[in-house]
Image 1 (tube, one colour):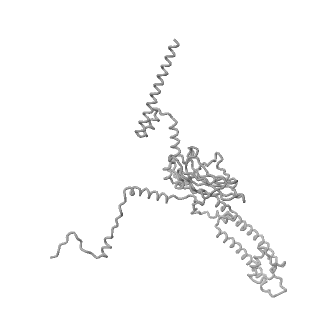
Image 2 (spheres, rainbow, N blue to C red):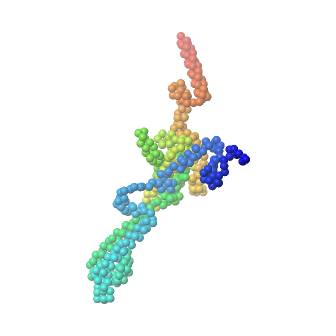
Image 3 (cartoon, rainbow, N blue to C red):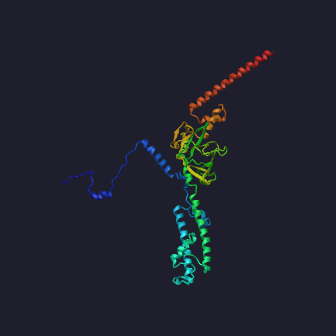
Amino acid sequence: MFPILIGLNPPRNPMEQDVESPAIVRQPKLPKQAREDLPKQLAEMDRTKTIQRYVQKDGKCNVHHGNVRETYRYLTDIFTTLVDLKWRFNLFIFVLVYTVTWLFFGFMWWLIAYLRGDLDHLADNQWTPCVNNLNGFVSAFLFSIETETTIGYGYRVITDKCPEGILLLLVQSVLGSIVNAFMVGCMFVKISQPKKRAETLVFSTNAVISMRHGRLCLMFRVGDLRNSHIVEASIRAKLIKSKQTKEGEFIPLNQTDINVGYNTGDDRLFLVSPLIICHEINQNSPFWDISQAHLAKEELEIVVILEGMVEATGMTCQARSSYVSREIKWGYRFTPVLTLEDGFYEVDYNSFHDIYETNTPPYSAKELADMANRSRLPITWSLASKLNQQDLPESEQEGQDAKTSLDNQGKGQQTERNGDIANMESESKV
C-alpha cells in the first residue's frame, strides 16, 4: 500500500510553478509613526515637484510662445528680430547677407561682360571692355568684392565706354552702403546690449521674514559687484499667484504689486554697497493673513526687478530674480556684510547670501495685529468678549471670569466709597 499524504499538493514542474504562481514579495511592516508621516512626506515631495517657476533665478522668463500664426509681424520689425536672435544665427545671417550680395553683383558684372562680348575679345588689344582685366566669373566676383568694400586694388577698373557698368556701379555702391549700415548696426547693438551688465547685479538666494521695528517684514538683499555704478536704480517686486474670483473666474499667474517703498521713495536705490530691500506686511500687503504654517503650503512666487542705467554707456539695464515659497525663510535675518576698515568701507561678498535665525512669532501680521488690539482693550461682559471667550479653553475662560469678577468688585467698592463721600459732604453742608 502506498502512504496517503494529506494536505500536500502533488509536485509540479519547477518551470510551470514559476510561470503559474509567481513569488509574492511582502513589504516590511513600517512603524506606526513612519506610516503616518509617509503620506505627508509624499505630499510634500509632490508639492515641491509641481512648483513651476515663472522667472528663473538667473532672470530668464520661463514662458514659451506657441501657436503664433501671425509670424509676419516678426518681419515688420526685422532689425529687432535680428538683434534678438542667438549669436550663432546672427553670425550666420551676417556672413550669408554679404556673401549673397557679392555673388549677385559678381554675376551681374560677368553677365554684362558676356553680353557685350568682352569675354570673346580677351586677346584683342584694340577692344575696350566694360571692366579691364575681367576674364571670367571668378574675376567678376573679385571685382564685386573690391567695389562693395571699396578696397580698390587698381588691377580691375571700369571704363567710360560702358554706361550699363556705370549704372551697376552706382547701384552696388548704394546697396552696399545700406547693407553695411544695417548689418554693422545690428552687430553693434547686439554687442553693446546691457544684458551682460546684469550678470554683476546679484540677488540673495533666499528671502526672509522677520520682525523689524515691531512690524513683520519680508526682506531680500541686492548688490552690485562692479565699481561703476547703476544710475537711477530702482527696485520693484511682484507676487505671482493664481487666484479665483468670487464669480468663479480662475486667473492663472495673477500679478500683484508688492510695495517696497514706493510711497516713501525707498524703492529708488543708491546701490554702492549691498542693500536689504524691505516690504512691511500691513493691511495692504498680499502677505497680511499668511502665517508660517500657511506659507509652507502656499504655491507662490515673488519676482524682483532691478532697473537702472549703466554709468559707462547710458543704456537701460534690468536684472531679475525670483523666490518661490520654499526659498522664503521665516524667522531669519541677513548677516551683515559691511565693515569699517582703515579709511574705507569693505563689503564681504562671501557672506552676501548668509542668514541667521532670529526670534520671530509664527503668526501672520493680521493675527499679531488682532492680538495687539485685544491686549489694549479692557475685558468687559460685552458680546464681543463673550464670543472671544467661547473660543478659549476652559482654564483660560475661568481666568477671564475671575478677572472680570474682581474688576466688578473693585468697581462696586469704588461706588460705595463715592456714595459715602457724597453723604458726608451733604451732612457737613447741613
